[in-house]
Image 1 (cartoon, helix red, strand yellow):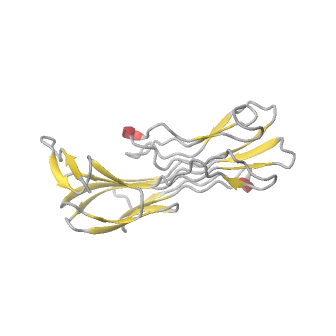
Image 2 (spheres, rainbow, N blue to C red; image 1 turned 90 degrees about the vertical axis):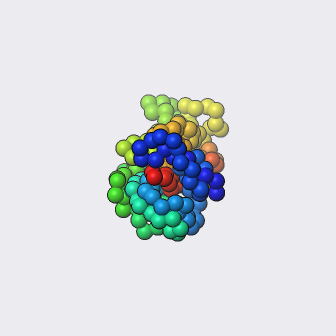
Image 3 (cartoon, rainbow, N blue to C red; image 1 turned 120 degrees about the vertical axis):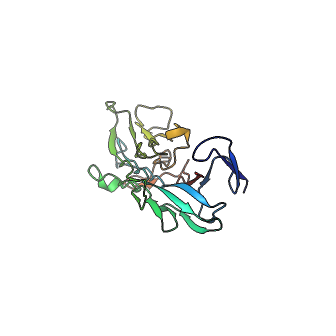
Length: 236
């Protein structure tokens, strides 16, 4: 599994600890994690971002779009013993570190809720450092000839969390952005790093390029990634 290098609590010459690569381990799949060394660990659970959705009206002159909610985040400092085995679960619903702490994913968009039903954000629970809610999704109706709003942004993660601050994916106005076929929205995933330069885990996502049949909502899947995570740092 590689090695981790850490300056420990007081700095100085880095220690070498079997089990990690670099100064942290980022887990993005369900697994059983074995503690590599006795000591204190900083654990961050980040819930997956919800998916965007779009629907044409039956005249194809309006496009209803809705964005997913951002994932929740939970953070804890835990003292663990070498050899401890912790079940880590990461799926669309939750990112959890055993029974210690967890964060739920952001809700997928619900186009039928236009205009008032916004996708719920994920929530962090069990963290002894902090529990943070994500940012809720939003929705809008783009109409041909109406360019007052040319894009909407989905839910991201809470910037107060250590590895929060991920912005939500953006959906463009299909009638304003003519790089797409007429009436199709364009989805721009979040490419801006979150806090401390980390990948934007928990950002709302999911392409809307393909659209849907008239009157039928569709979740886009182009560009979709599983972006929930558990981040483990050895503190010494």
